[in-house]
Amino acid sequence: MSGRYDETLCCCALNMIFGYEPKISHALVEAFGSAAAVFSLDREGLDTVFGPYSVHRSRISPKALDDASRELEKAASAGCVFIGCTDGDYPALLRECPDAPAGIYVRSSLRPADILGKRGMLSVVGTRDVSAYGREWTMRVVSSMSSVTPEPPVIVSGLAYGVDFIAHRQALDSGLLTIAVMATGPDSVYPSRHASIADEIASHGALVTDFPVGTSPLKVNFIRRNRIIAGLSSSVILMESRMKGGGMVTAGLAMSYDRNVYALPGRIDDDRSRGCNWLIRSRSAEPVFSLEDLAAGMGLRMGEGVRRKIPEDYVREVFAGRLDSRKIGDLAAVISAVRRNRGITVDELAVMLGRPWKETREYVAMLEQDGMLAVDIMQRCSICVGRQ
Image (cartoon, rainbow, N blue to C red; front, side):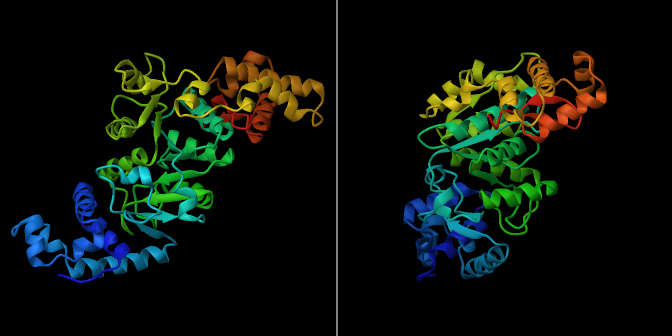
């Protein structure tokens, strides 16, 4: 099957053939220098590479290219571009991984070079069942990255519930670029309720996947997705995780790629921190003891703005001139109580402050609207410092 073929088309074909066996396509491209060279092999060449009885040999065929041509048309109709592994816009760090996909689908309003060409990327991962502690520190870590020098990193995560969603949301609110790596095809979003934030991410970053159009969110796809989250970034931070979970898988992949791995220490009796604590104990991950240390470990320097203000002072600054001094004092008291009692509910807060529930809820709503508090569906409050 000799001839000259379009490189992007051939990369797409390899990705469709070896999507669940990416090491094969990676090895082929490494050996022959391009995807087109693989499809230019004649029968004898294919026998030499795969052996005459290999199941893979017959898959390198004109039909595979026809299928890939239709796939590229469907991707374009879905507003996506396909970037082959030999393309200059393919992420450099991901290309170094031995199981890098033969190509990725990208949905973004930005040029690929402006989002994928940045080597400074930080992957933030963790449990879906995030605690108030994990929520607060995910916000703090991500928001702190907006003030680092010489250049803020792109925040990478997986668009899932919990830590992933918080990382993307905080990145967008902090003016950072963010990449969501999906476990579906480029034409769908999972979970579906994250469709709105996915659109925001596509406008201020990118949606990335290596799954063909029409791929459903099967369980096995999330493991395959995690290698891209780990491979894109030079550093990965695990915010919260049980001993088993996608975050631990991503951390393990990052270690195998020789990336910097960090973990947020947690209570020894909290299952959601057991994975993080184990990584730290086994010296597989560096503990996050401070935002300054985290930035320094990534070769960055923390800006003064992140360290300058405590939440109570920030409340007084934001509401000065908008409210009378008594109300500002009450709002500062709410922030102070939440800071001392992470995860406190609105009911508990009202009792602690000796205020009517309706008034307390009003103050909490004001602080939440201004991005200073986060309140979950159980009415538990945590500090949000993303706008400090």
